[in-house]
Image (cartoon, rainbow, N blue to C red):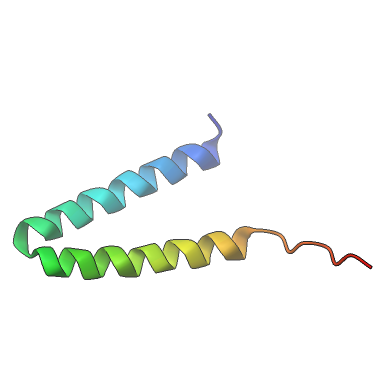
Length: 56
C-alpha cells in the first residue's frame, strides 16, 4: 500500500469517527456535517484529477 493511499484511509477513518461522535449528540447535525464533508471530498477529488486532453 502506498503512503498516499494509507493517508487517505486514515483520513477517512478520522472523519467517520468525528461524524459518529457528533451523531451521538445530534443526528441532524451529523447529517449536515456529513453532507458538507462529502461535498468537500468530491471537490478535492475533482481538483486532484488531471484535465483530459481535448480531441481535435
